[in-house]
Image (cartoon, rainbow, N blue to C red; front, side, top):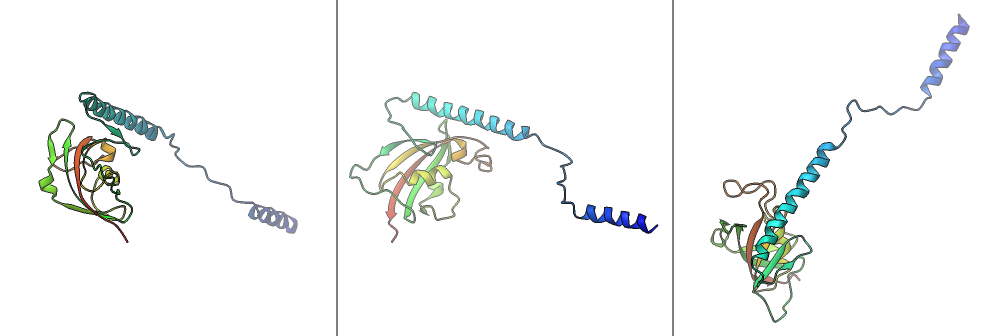
Length: 181
């Protein structure tokens, strides 16, 4: 009896010294939902870019510039004196409007009024495209931007004004730049 207890105790002791084993998940996801979402979003971006390209192709006299940030723009009023663009921490005052690609006004310049924004510091409800576009502008310039939906209002849109995933056109006038110290 004593030997049996010693054997059982030895087996228990050896089991206790064993390193823990990783548990396997009960359910495994293959990632197909994420893969399908990526494919769907790529198609949507391609379609939006094709719409914007068609608008630009219909007006070949205009000189369109492609931004490194994924949008297009052209100057309505361009600064020819070469003043500085806004940098991190500069306070800018500007006006802007937003319309859909068919030219239907969504938010007018009058509704927005004069906006103030501190470059890359203000936590303001301002679409990504305009935040990036302001950094390209000089004081007194007026620029029209073409933003795909991911640079505009994205998945959320604006309640009662614009739906989800709608590319937009925005004309921005930079009134002033107050350089940071």
